[in-house]
Length: 437
Image (cartoon, rainbow, N blue to C red; front, side, top):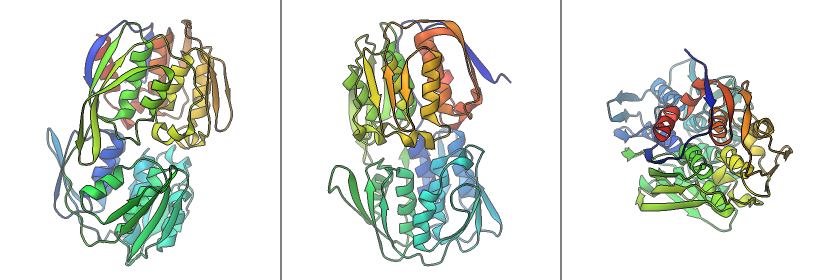
């Protein structure tokens, strides 16, 4: 099977309507939350990516029953309490979200469980989750990198926790552990994605949220006895459609309508940043669904983007989209500056370093540090050279960034690790073909 893609020229003008696959964050959270209910939960438009399949395999190993149908997935979980087999190993694959959330789920596992992941995930920091879980009473063999072993306890005690990295994964892991604890857990969390809070509210799980200042939320979660089933029509993923948004903006005389996208305010940093740069993006047909904001997104091309100094308040809500935001900056007039982005290097690859490499390949001057990048835009840049992109730790977002760069700037590109898109967006190239033709 071919392991690379070749692209030899810029994309032509287009005017299309597309749908993208289900939101990855919501898909994994649906799987986790459904495993906590003893009743049947149903999801439509569940993302069928490797990360979500890994989540399904993990909860199945823990005792949940799973059925797939043509248009839906059903889960009957085993409740808040479970008795796992001895010597059980769970494989989180490439998914940091799954790897960190599942540890919170396992807070009351009385038998030792081993958690493993692929080569990329095994390099990522898990101590940010194991530290608070130890406060609940969990014990670990190894606590920074995978593989690690965890043993929970019958009656975890509620804790106070400060989450200061803006990591929704860490916050959610603690919230899941709090569900199974005795008492009330209090979390002071730097603002980040709030999908879990919204799901807790919808399921009538006892949760209090106070937004006392612009940087931190105060969250209180009480332990409970049962979780109701969760039926969910999962909206499209803004992280996936981000690639097509930037492709449309930077192409000539083009327009794109993307249907039914999750535009949760904690996820639309890319829209706010691109709008600051001069982008023409509109939300239409807006509605609310189980606490989430859903909308169609209309994008029109423009040749009037300007460089910006990006406010750091948008970092958390755009963390997965910065790679394509950097492409917009490369095609803008003037200089763009982005800082406090060390979290980008905690992803599947050191993404800040790779962004700099790709910008260098296409001839865009940039100055990069451990946590910042300054990009000197060139709106007239057009390539006529060969570029190979490989050895990027099979990072799905590096692959997709490279494809979009090739279609925007031209040249002859050979981009390896084609299978990497199965992690988050298996239909990326299929949808791209619909736009091109």
